[in-house]
Length: 170
Ligand code: SF4
Ligand code: SF4
Image (cartoon, rainbow, N blue to C red; front, side, top):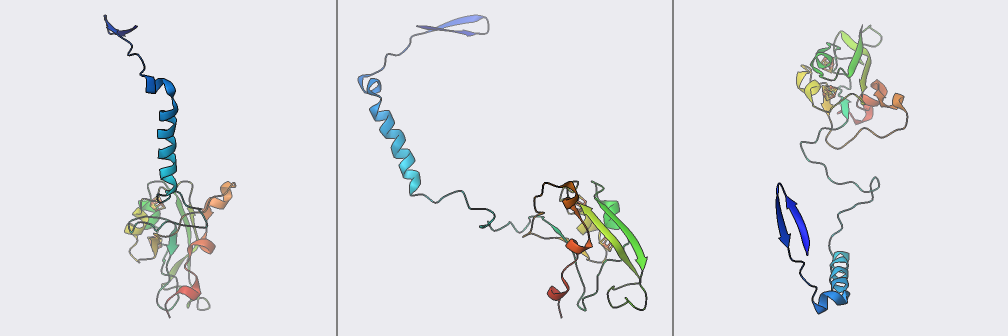
């Protein structure tokens, strides 16, 4: 007999005696093993990441990319609107004016000489993408910021953000 106290009242419960089959334990072990074995033949929920990757959702927001235009010039004009819109204050940049020598590299007179995103601050909200009037920054839906043991590795500069030139449209 066991006694269970519920608030200020006492409820007395009879302990149900075990049946003969329950006392054998063997049927319960067999039942458990059958459940385990049945999982050998079902589709596995785990994958061998990072060698295997799951398809991302179309609305997944991952690593940023700074896009180039059709001629391969950087679209970003260092207007700063993405940094203003960023709730995490993760974006910093330094603007510069293009010169006759580098004019083919940048679409407009001003460009970002330095553009950095602190991925440890970023919450991948996508507000920078929405704020950009030049369609220069996007969050990719198939790439994540890689893991690292060093904090400095999470400061992504232009070398890791700008779309590779060879991949730009010709
Ligand atoms: S995704 Fe959001 S938090 Fe990350 S840099 Fe853009 S605006 Fe900032
Ligand atoms: S990414 Fe867009 S919003 Fe941000 S500085 Fe460049 S042009 Fe302006």
